[in-house]
Amino acid sequence: YDYDRDVAYIPASLVTTVINGTGNSTTPSDPTQSYTKGDVNGNGQIDAADYLMVMDSLLGKYTMSSSQRKVADVNGNGQVDAADYLMIMDCLLGKITL
Image 1 (tube, rainbow, N blue to C red):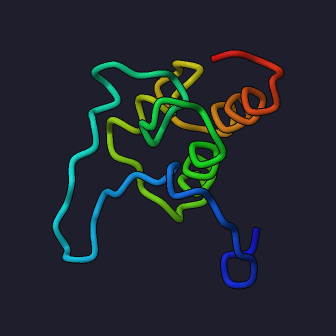
Image 2 (image 1 turned 45 degrees about the vertical axis):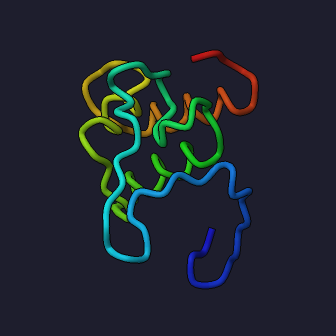
């Protein structure tokens, strides 16, 4: 995916506002309180947005909060790495259940 060239569209229902246009922050529910491993954006499901957030984090394009890192560490090894990324991908493909 080339961020300078490619365009992707996602339904508005899958978007969680973290910072709105006024610069004021909103606080999404804390995914560490009650969460599903792999649900990095805290929307209640493991989806492509979670996969992309982990990928962008690994590439240094996105910095996850500590709560997001805990949820993204699906294999429980204490770090978010390529293994977590691949496990989320396999979950999306229906190969595994997280």
